[in-house]
Image (cartoon, rainbow, N blue to C red; front, side, top):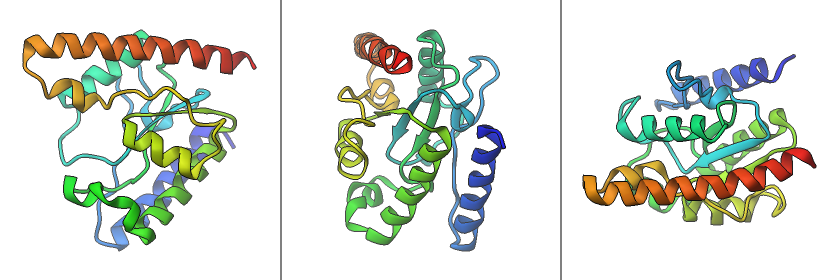
Length: 184
């Protein structure tokens, strides 16, 4: 079975579990304009955020992320979240204290990584990197983390240009690391 088919099966399992719990699961979708495959990406790199927001897709932040991933050559990167259901900022803040939710979602994330095979995991956010390093092999998680795309978009237009530039620079550094990982 192909990796994308396995990811779709896992997605269905997660959707059903969340539905039965009265929750809504969310996954990064494909985006035709950018060519980014989102959750169905099977490249040797996975960009991992903390949890889905309550916003809509595509938001300005999503479009920025997808455009930059496409520009950097990560169209087929796997994009996912540790937690698969939408949480409020307050709920997400102390997620490591919610052992059952965290445990179940880490199990799903591990299954994703197993399906993808050997990947470099890049955290979207410093707090996510700390969490990933705690629960995954140190070699699997990149030492470089990427600012969460929503961080970039929350600033006024003038400041946003500066933050976008910093985001692109970091993505370039990550690309160099991932290129050496791909060759290994």
